[in-house]
Amino acid sequence: MLISRAIMGAALMAGFKISGSEIHGHAVRGGSAHAIVTYGKNAGSPLIRTGDADVLIGMEMLEAARMIRYLKRGGVALVSKLKVVPINSMLRNDRYPSEDEVAQIFSRRTDKFFLLDVEKAAERFGGKRLSNSVLYGAFSVAIDNGIDMKSFEMALLENVPKGTEEANLAAFREGRRLIMSYDV
Image (cartoon, rainbow, N blue to C red; front, side):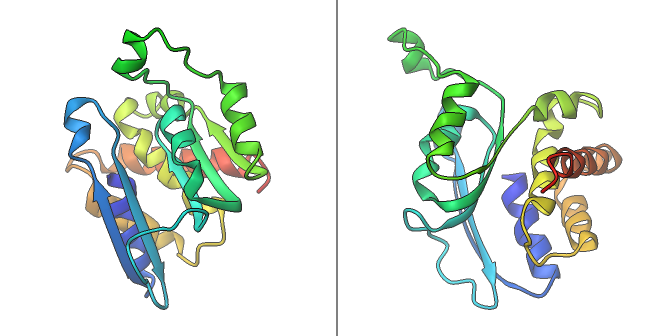
């Protein structure tokens, strides 16, 4: 939820109206969680209809693929390479899709699909808990989002635990670098 809260904070600082919703009750039991953020001159509803999302940010490959129906054609997908096999899939011996298969799923919807090794990037700055900041940094440059860098950084610092600010900023900047290396 760090990413959604930071995006909302940055958008608010940049002068936009914001709206958002979070679904995270099942995450306590190992299930998925998701958040929706809208911002602009008029933020509108915190709900996104199928095919209306400009950006999909996925912290886990399979969950991102499950949410693809919300991404508009030609939208941007920022997806972590992280694999967390759901318990019910393990019990049924279901096969987890490969990175190539996930990329094929997204290629049917967009050519702006970025599969990022955010955990590896986060490890360089202090651990996997910084993965959110890496993806948040990737979002900050993946599209023309109307939010300035200072707002992104200030919103991040307001949402991370005390004592982790520098590590999170470094991870955020690494996420920016990862996307810019794609020549967006």
